[in-house]
Image 1 (tube, helix red, strand yellow):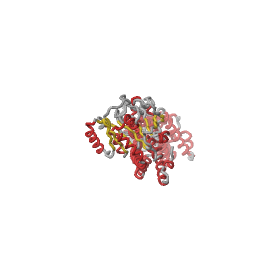
Image 2 (tube, helix red, strand yellow; image 1 turned 120 degrees about the vertical axis):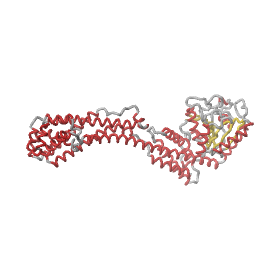
Image 3 (cartoon, helix red, strand yellow; image 1 turned 30 degrees about the vertical axis):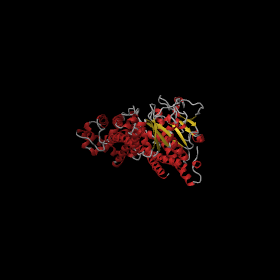
Image 4 (cartoon, helix red, strand yellow; image 1 turned 135 degrees about the vertical axis):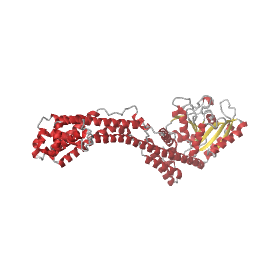
Length: 593
């Protein structure tokens, strides 16, 4: 591959430096385009991905090779619609059947690049169109009819480029016979677009019957946007209709910003026995190509003009990609926020359930009453609450089994609350994601609307760990209280159960008769603990136990939430800001080149 310093004109160090800087920028752009990913199924993402592929192809096929070799021969791509007569035209320009022409479509599957033998070194390596392998073609001494000339169609034809050296092609310019732009073959159409994107100039062939077709005009408008030089060949024009058709076509070209395009008319004439046009039919076009080839300064100007247009187009594509990448980032943030919100809401609901007395119902309340006494006990206790210190020892002389039953009931009730809210969060997050195209794509056929496998066991383990930690708090707090040593030795479980009751009733959000029962329950637990540890210590113990419980619940929910968030753990390859910076740099390059 030719280096920038080798390909730049001698005696122009500033130009060398600019070319080297341009190549460095373009290679950085190429690397980031290659790394760019748009994984989310957003509107316009498919178009953006196609733009990335097209931009990479044009960088490899044309922009980088041309910046590295500004003085290389011009590449004139002959393109057009099916049956327009492209191959017949190229054969006429060379004066020899070298490309396949005929009635069976498509005729041109394998692109043929004709060049002057002196220019062979420019095209034999992978300087331009590096994705196409090279096949050396040979012009035989005995002419072959045009319907049998050129390379035979085969399965690999669209992945190779046939190089044919011929002295009839002027030095400094090469002709590339491209497949039909509206071919019935997808591969042919893609290859035609790739070749046209690699051209310094287009020789666009159409006919008197098809010059207004939509597909060719879409490509011509693309040429106008890129400011590429275009020559339009109006082929097979009946002499009687030449004035009318050519006038109409000129008006269309003018209207679409292609008024500067050269228009050549090839009248409808009979072909000879080899399927060749008479030489005079293409003489104006051939003369124009020879004049371009002989004018070194003119060739350089064409190359720079086309190159700048290609860079401007690339700048627009990169800017659009930056916006698409930003949209991907924002969409991922929305999905992540939806998942986090669902689980944060669940955490709030669990928090409320653990502090409003809701857990002091049913089984928990029954087991606590079994532990401390009957309902009659609460009535007596309310009347004699200040005599609690004298009676508290009596609550702990029995077997520890009732306290353990309280712990078990609390574990069961708390586990049910956490399980229900985690399931609600999963369903909420799943619904939010499935209402979004990107979320549906990430979820696919997986159902994340319930809790994960093993979640009940993890919840139970965390609750037991919390209860064990709470018991350790009780032991630690009681170490310095010698007078309560006998109570602690007999009643750690009981004190722990009392502390759990206090933790779950700090706001006493109960109504009706429950206030009298569950509220009294909480008072018993609180007075019991205050009798042992003191009022300040009880508040501190309850606060520490509550914070530990909430921390463990948050941990469980974050683990469940991760099932959604891990699907967003993809790399965009490069940030939108970097791409936007590339777009601005490319625009400056196009303006100053």
